Image 1 (cartoon, rainbow, N blue to C red):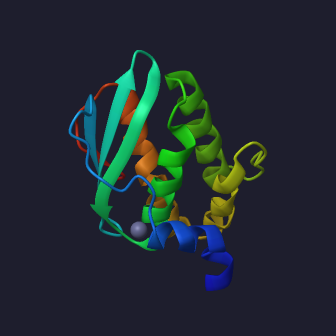
Image 2 (image 1 turned 45 degrees about the vertical axis):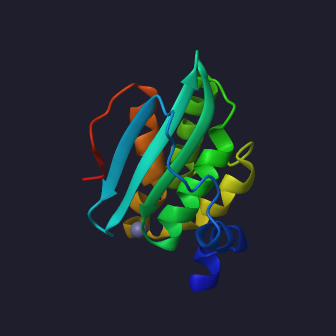
Length: 145
Ligand code: ZN
């Protein structure tokens, strides 16, 4: 079970999360919290017009939440808001739909196994809910509950 769930890419990103830093010149900062597991993160986004020019996060959480946040920042950096939202929708479908289309998700497809563990889905989607809020320009704290 653990081998299925914690695939290599998830282990790698949880141990060495990418874009794991705060950002002084962020245009948006949103906090996310998953009380079920205790995952917490602060997401920093610097928008340049309609483009996610830079994105980073800090926080503490389980391997899945950390890896998901790390891969999320890699996936949407340099993308337009619309492109980032499209990736977000596909990732959400991957974790919540019975027959998701995993194509085009690249490394994010590693999270497809998480669908079998409903309690962990919120760990995997926390960073993405927080991203949605940041893209919408909100600065409220995002909770998965
Ligand atoms: Zn978690």
